[in-house]
Length: 630
Image (cartoon, rainbow, N blue to C red):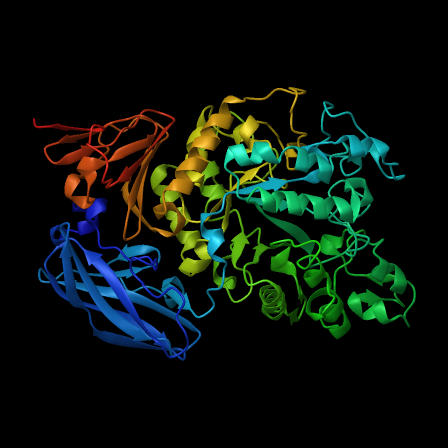
């Protein structure tokens, strides 16, 4: 018997992904019945039986047979239900066809063989991210490098700072890397909020604003005040107020794994074993030695066994977490630095406990606030939404996209992609994306951060094929999750390593830039804003080859079709019957017309191109679709 995964168009494969189109109740409660739906096209086979295998209290059970509830637009929709017996549940589908074939469908896709539970779809009772977040466009600002106001000229520099002019070259490694000081401040951000508004940004993410002995400020000396070099508390109050007035949300950055060794808590206990703050860190040898982040002595690691530390940092009425979310600061949430290592050392693992404390405190103060956890490795199976609403991770989006567009003529001297292969094709891109997105419940997947680059890694443009940034940005704005624009991406900036990608923004052309990227980012942000299917819609890959990746985002009201091309693939096509409303597709970006030949939609595949269509549209005459009969 032939495997239908080889003979039937991918666009006609059975599909389920945990989105609202398939799981109407996105916030189930304990013991509540949850209806699950799956779509099957008759071209894949005549159905004999469909049912769900689900977990209950650690045991697996087959659910009742799914019933055919609807035939619409050529698809057959089946429905069954499970009961939320536990806070965490997992399930997968069994599909049996009259021709004797059978398939399992889990979060990684279809298989003829039974699959491990860890690859099941995941659903839980923890969905609590604020409604505004699923449509957010995030912009990351490294304050020292974004904009310098006239206020900065009045600041007296500390002894550690090496002053730099705005157009100076950025040191990427070695002496001076953390000490070079360009003087960007919070008032400078206020002066450029109109740029962000015009760009389509809705959420501003600031890397740390607390004082330290570095330009990155991840070595905080206190969490109780804003660095005077940035304008102090007053500047933050004014920035948040101005941002809110223009419709932005704004979040900060907290280091929950460590402080700086100049931090007031650390200084109170260093070489002082009797100090209360001794329990805040992992001291030894009469407080002369201590554990630090990867052994970096300036970054001593917090000991979350301390109840007093928990109170001062998270749970107390006047805790650090609480203070900046309340008046007069009114920030809208936190990104938690090194979240994956927080509370973990040797035999101790308080990771889940601590992230729940963060979540509960933040959401109790402001239910509309968001909390995101940095996880530089595979985040999925350790991030289920009970703590962090989403992950800042590179594995399910950033790295697969880098590898698809990687320029083999440029050596990855930064080592961002790690050991192993750097170049992959489109089939492998999709597999890698699904592999690393599979373990997230849908509500977490929608709130993961999708950057092309950040302040910690090289610029995407520098290591990829010329022209790739535009295509990758289009994917970034149309994949599930929050697109993250690192300040300077919209100017086409370069950076060979994380530190020298922290480039001062060339507001006055102080350094080489590509301002043509501005219009692309504006267009993608507008498309994301105006098309709700890109906020919460399902994700279905309909055509995948080495050079072309096509997918649809779909909710009950709209479908968005995206075709991203790295190179030529003249075989790229899908059956017209696979997507409803294809005859009324309206091109939103790219300008290509869809050609239908013998009921096959011929997909555009010009090298380094991306096209986006919305369908169906009630006010559109179908002029972007050309129907031909051979």
